[in-house]
Length: 109
Image (cartoon, rainbow, N blue to C red; front, side, top):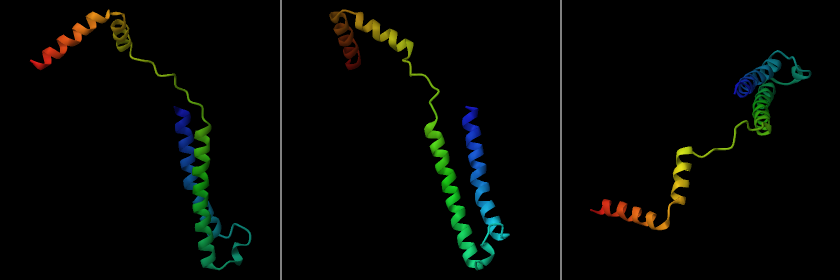
């Protein structure tokens, strides 16, 4: 369970940090060639790349979760229900019919 929470926390941090880093890089001309762009082009490019980076992080998280192997066991039936079912199967057909008739008659009256 802690592995799932760790993956979610790391992905959430990456989803927050990637767009901020991209906008920061465009604002302070960290990326090469950004200084030659107009201010409106820088704004559009940084916003577009920030949105793309969030979508890539989400896609990466989805792929990571899909590759994860399940750690749970096969579902098991309730032992009480199973015992009652086995007992009802082992009863003779005539006694089951009389039990059902008495239950129905008790509800009607």
